[in-house]
Image (cartoon, rainbow, N blue to C red; front, top):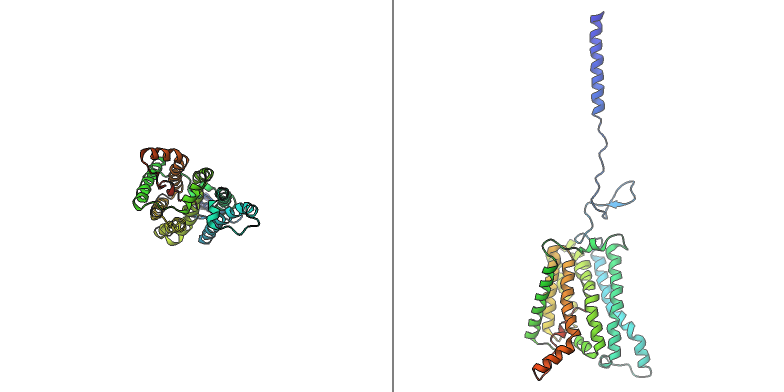
Length: 323
């Protein structure tokens, strides 16, 4: 009987071992793979937020080409409409009972010019709010992340400052070579000291940020994802220069300077994937021009002391980044 029980004992032991092996081989459900950063397209079942394969960033913006074009058109409309609305009460009061003033008469009115230039400030502020609303989806994303307001490893602040100074020197040489014919902007700068100082302030306080966010931020980021970097650089650079063409049509040197700066800024945006270097270059470039405007009376007196004729205004005509 003992010999008969031995096989049963062995069989029971084998079944126990097999049961343990089966229990150990039971696989747990695979974990859900989450993206490192929040994005737009992938929706996790049962979760209260959405994720996607590619995180939101300067080259993967949370807006498309249609939204970018609408933002650009709206920003241009604001810059054209708000200053006119800003001066409308003054024009209605000052010219009441008189024939409608001509453009030449308005440009000769120092108060009108000052109010018109001041109207660019609320226009830029409204444009910045529009950019924030479109780019961040009303605060769902970070401005720093979607635009790339950080320094790349191979393009820091000093390189940006040095390039801005170099571009400014080239702009002076180009403008001097082709001559500096008076433009509408020159008339504004020469209208009054107050108008010139307000324009100098706008050139460093709002204009670089607004234009970089619109062109190298909103517009380029959307276009490069659809037509590629090379064509996006060409389109954005051409649009930025073309917008200022009519304003500086009398000065081929200023147009060429704008075109060069636009190509360089857009190329840097494409190469670094960041907007901060473009903004710094634009800021320094405009800052130099603003300093020239502020100290122009003293520079003019110095030039007149050196030579009998006053300067031609070539330096001030380079201020071509205010839309």
